[in-house]
Length: 119
Image 1: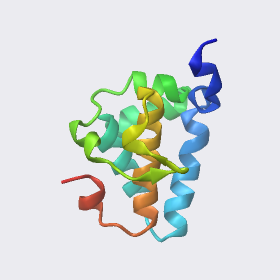
Image 2 (image 1 turned 30 degrees about the vertical axis):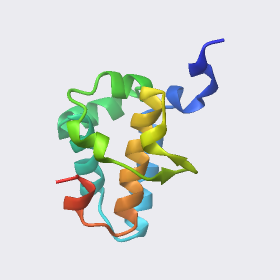
Image 3 (image 1 turned 90 degrees about the vertical axis):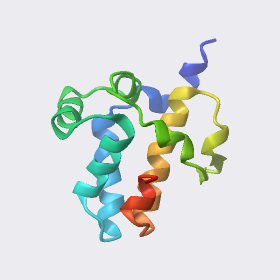
Image 4 (image 1 turned 135 degrees about the vertical axis):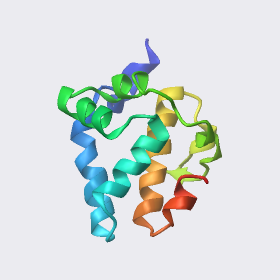
């Protein structure tokens, strides 16, 4: 059996999850612009590319497969999301999704954007 079938999130539309990232940030007095900055930093999309992904309704697998340049410093993202250490996730796609989750968590927890972007 294909391992990917075990992960429903791979087939979820990025456009369906994106507003949840924004809501999570805004509940903690952070902005949609900061969410976009994080997503663009991680994936290499520019604002137009990010909007195109949302408008096209691409799933997470496509969203990350089409990402222009996954940030080389993403390997510096460490910690726990959903009870799993992100640096230990073996599936590359799941790891990218959890990296994004972790960055959004850090934003919502009030971490400075420079620290979130591993600068």
